[in-house]
Image (cartoon, rainbow, N blue to C red; front, side, top):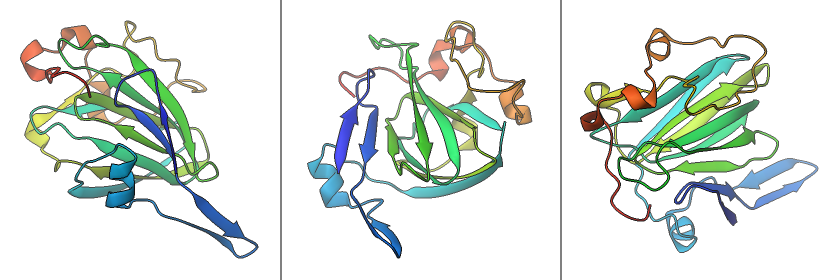
Length: 188
């Protein structure tokens, strides 16, 4: 397994070892001991799957309280995945990083608690899996506007994305009340 840092502290790209032959492939998608030894010492309490078609954009979502760390991967198709540091007081506040995740590259993306997360589907369809460090709490949920001009994320879309009602109502990061945002507590 190879762990690749990104330009945001704590946000990681993980390339699991894949063993393949003419029959197909095998890989570990999670092994607590092995991932902890590689620097990802977290406990996951909930697994989720989402299935979407091309042009669907989900995010940028966060929870506070009950901030969720997420280990995400694509089981079928491809997505453009984004993490945004929204921790008040963070030296990287408002910065984002991205990665393409696909069934072919088998990469994983770790987004620590305190970051907003979103993705758009760039293939015909995508089956997206994520492990979360805290349970979903609708009362703690927030949404940063996917096309916040201050973030200027270059989503690879042909036209307008297909959004949920919740995501259409997202707000610019600078307009999220500071008490709704997580706090920076040192290194991620």
